[in-house]
Image 1 (cartoon, helix red, strand yellow):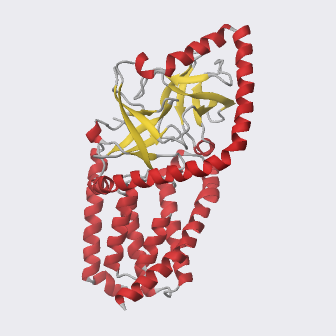
Image 2 (cartoon, rainbow over the protein chains, first blue to last red):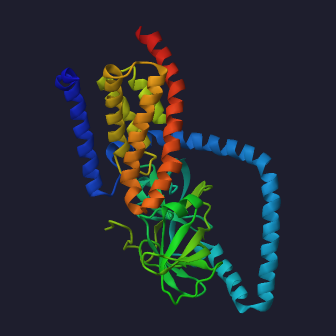
Image 3 (spheres, chains in turn green, cyan):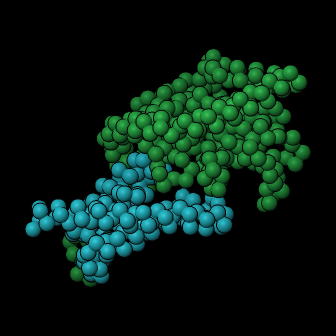
Length: 286
Length: 131
């Protein structure tokens, strides 16, 4: 062991280690791009990852067709119950009509938001060790993607871009506690912040926190972005599933089930620019 | 994590320099998909590679059970560091303990189990090309 520490091999290893640490630290401090070694590896491996992601999706679809029969029956029954409930609300409440208008307003995001510029991207790799569901997409700076660009699907918000390479980017989801975004209850206009927590992330939920004690948020309400921070205003986040009291500061919080199916996403849209894009609301931000 | 199992199996039959470079290259590729800080996996895998090579040379025998035990040790080192850097300070103590028991410990076990087939494959390759 002592001989190894004095050997030429050890000095070479130490030199390589120092170069990697210095290169990595310099890009962490600059902060706007992937480190060069990671970017090179990512650029080389992106076509391979896309190929294997395609195979994985095909195999997953093949086995899903055998497993989904019972699930479809259960889902059908639940949807029928939901439809009956909505029909009753339409007949009885003005808010039900307003919710239908809300659906129509958000179905075609581009028509309502002509200032949005989108780039389509496909998920090519997931980090299986990340409890918050982070993933990699197959577009990078060559497709005008920048750090902190919002990532959405037709259903709702997914997260934002945290690292950008030439041909790939990493996305942090809304389940991650690093991300906090300003949000509103669409029915009551109560404001708060949506962020993640570890126990909720493991259920696929996020947290609508810092609600006032006088708020009237209810289960089933839809939560949308308020326009503060890096996300544009009015994007769907999810629906309220449970309401509780935060022991640490006695505020109300709600558990949000995101509309975007974060564990089944295959394609996303990255909003590369929109009117008012600028400030961010993440930990350690600009 | 299969890449960690593969790395340990390779490093058991490699010199320290080869183990370091193998760890570095594997870590760089893991960095391209992982949600860890930039360069985290490259540095940690490099350290694990050198450590595994040294441990096999000076402390452990070179057999499949030593390989599995070494892989478990390396996986424990990796996952605890990853937990410390990425998760520990953003959640409560109770949730951290739950995460360690329900996620990290099983991950260490699965990583150690997969070291066994990788060990045999690497041993066969080593005997074929180097002996």
